[in-house]
Length: 452
Ligand code: JFZ
Image 1 (cartoon, protein in one colour):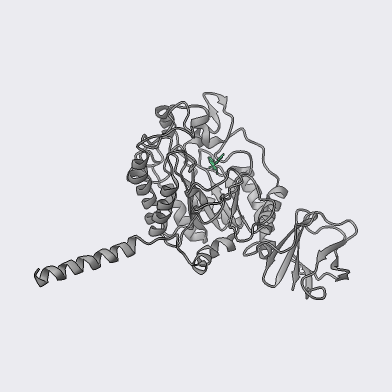
Image 2 (tube, protein in one colour):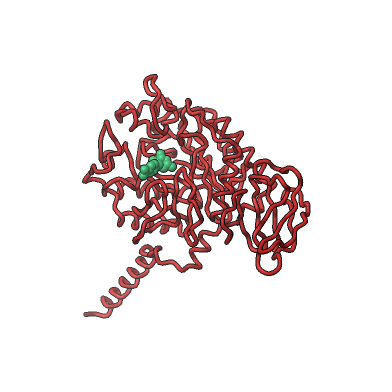
């Protein structure tokens, strides 16, 4: 063997090692410290906006004049609309009032720190100009504006993190459809071409999302329950996404570990950075488990004109507090109209939440669960140096009994967070008693800061 050949061989080997170390990195092996650093912004943020928007907004829950039961974004399945007919609705998707700046401002004013928008829902329609598809806003609708690009710019302006929801299940792509019309969501049905869809369509689309819109906060996968999607694909996708954006956070629906609506992973070897309870809040916090409850403000995710069943400001604000008191995040949904407008009832409620948060921010952002059980009158959140008592039910006798923090009463001072007003308190047996003003300063939730 001549020397030149040997040296060439060595160089090739070196190059190969370099390539595999660059591209073959296993993101499942991460130190606790690295993981904590990656999750830090998300734990600080606590409150985000979910946005379900796509062609289904055009139907708005109605098909051929009839109200269709169920969540709006499932109408293709619920009303059994054939693919070619569904495609015609995209020709009516022309949200001329869409203003990314206004949307992100609504989120920022509400105190939301990130938005998660449906880059693609189960109907497969892409809200950006995908190079591997004509089933997108640019090629299939008259709107022809890259919705994700405009949102990315607005997010930068307002300091809100941009995140994408992405459906693995795809009712439109022929290689992904397991069950065909009239049912798109048969959990037992199978398509032998599904791996081709993952390699030739899903991954290229993810690559576009991960390389063309700057740093993303989260990739929020969904539709992982379909039969052809396997746990090894989930692990591969997880690594693929982190390989393109190492610091991104990925929800647990990237793999097959999620248990129903409760959303946390079952025992086993599953990837995903956090659990995704849907339309519910866990009863108690779960130490060491990260989770985010996603919820609607009415009953649907995607716009339904007839759904007027709005939650009250009180329910929404208390839900946010309840979630944070158990160590989770709250991802609250809006379903914009086909004209591109966030429904007014949603905007009003978000404004009320923002008003509450402006005064009480300290008790929410970066706060987490306390060691105390949830009291009947409200909730606790905790930060190093302060316990926050969120009083929902104001005591009629003006006395609130609270747990001690360590020796003595454990607290240096107790104040009403919104005003700074100092409250008198003293030890009573194992607990402490605080004297409150006669009536609640905030009937939804008055926060007391207990400095310790
Ligand atoms: C999923 C989507 O199907 C829905 O459209 C919405 O995007 C929501 C946030 O996520 O909802 C689900 C997911 C799983 C089940 C039910 C609804 N499930 O397993 O019963």
